[in-house]
Image 1 (tube, rainbow, N blue to C red):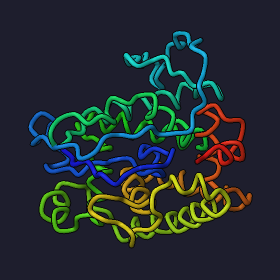
Image 2 (image 1 turned 45 degrees about the horizontal axis):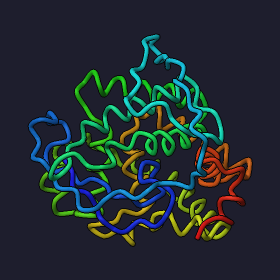
Image 3 (image 1 turned 30 degrees about the horizontal axis):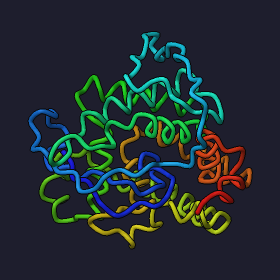
Length: 291
């Protein structure tokens, strides 16, 4: 159900975390329609390597089985084991979230057939795990429940996320083909999301200033910079927040406020996890080694 955007990506941070600018999707049928009923879409670009990752010796071993929050094992993908060397993987809850997202990502139809990024488990895992490592446990459990509930209802939250982005990148298409099928958002909900987005856009700007080389690999920052073929950090975040349940969004906002009160920067924390997962010792080391 999607159309791949094709702006060249010379950065290291993947679209999967909403920070980089890899190709992304444009849904073309109802977000609630079965995947097999959607018209196929065409990839418009190849996927570039996502992140700074140092060469590692091939010493990876099979990962321990991941147990979902409901006690059931999470199926490993053929691309396991993950060959990260910088830090260990996530907790069972974090791994269950990433794997459930990955499964939903497989159900997003792409114009012209399956997109290359839908086979890039290692990058997807690295980028999404880097994000969820920053979350408190109660928010992670709430979001995992969102994903489980969506599966039970036949919804695909990743399809809905990309559909929401089209409100900015292709407004006419969004109004005609997508908006009628998406859960409506109240004015209060939209205002809550915009409060969060304003804080996070400021954090992303501060990160770009502090780490200009790494920042050069990030998405363009603001919705005002969106084009049909490139989606900003702000728009991506808006799409993602719109898929959260109210409980998850409340917990997420509380986390953002806590980080703000502590003088932390969530973009910096997420990107630090990203480079550690890629094998660097620090953001400073990763910054120094960027071209």
